[in-house]
Length: 203
Image 1 (cartoon, helix red, strand yellow):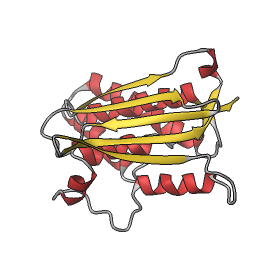
Image 2 (cartoon, helix red, strand yellow; image 1 turned 180 degrees about the horizontal axis):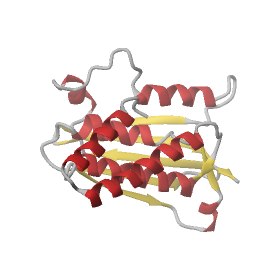
Image 3 (tube, helix red, strand yellow; image 1 turned 90 degrees about the vertical axis):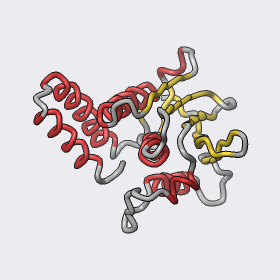
């Protein structure tokens, strides 16, 4: 997660307090405390239930919607079936891609952003998560003036890619992988799609 995340959230809380928006600050604090609590609790866990990950993503994205009003909408979908309650995955693999879409794809977008997350089965024992946005695209985002330049801080996507490499054991076929697809319409960039493939682990 972005190292400046907590600092930015505290600024958001300060805004609501100074604006005397008591109801909003209570809702914001509820999402914030849940996101931080889950992040700390899951930091040492190898796997968590898919339903728990989805619940965490809802809290994170609702909080970001409060930080950036009317900036984006989102939806999270998952496959149906009894087994969804038993599917497990490593924590904090999906959130960085959602964060990147908001931070880099939507901040300079002139229309309202749309973020979609879809969990599905891709084979007998593979879990696939697709994160798609209608942002400005990777190339344009990298050229945007005013984007924070954190040259001394690894990009959250890079950190996740490193985690993926560590999950894949040397000499074995890759069980984890990330596929990036730059979306375009009429030859113009219109977002990014990330496909994250994970082994289907049943707990």
